Length: 143
Image (cartoon, rainbow, N blue to C red; front, top):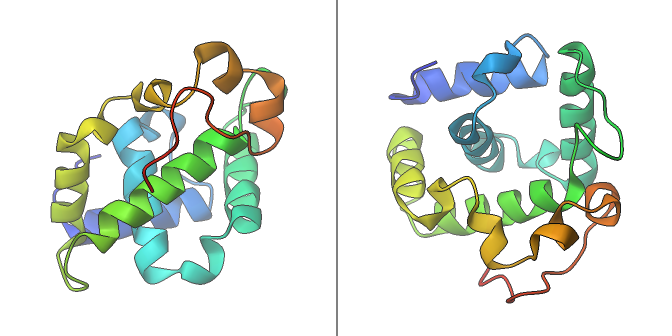
């Protein structure tokens, strides 16, 4: 799915919420596009509790098991939401969301391994971090 306009980002976020988006389209950029859209347009469901529910249900709908080894990951989700919120704050409130996403993806956050600058791999991909928030153990998050 091309995310080159705000309508495409809204459609993507809606498909995640209603659990109709094909799993193959749930890319790194799609994660951040959804986060940005939720933060700007639906802050009521951009909370830790609601995001966990949305992603868990989406995973179930796409036959992705939410276990200690796959599916929903709480630390990655919350860190990504914090990163998206901070990136969104650096833009004008009316900046086109697709431009914000393009800027985010061109930043270090656009690299799928960005979290490994803050967490050791073993910590980040451990069961504890999947289930609940685990503080970074390499460097504090700057946001």
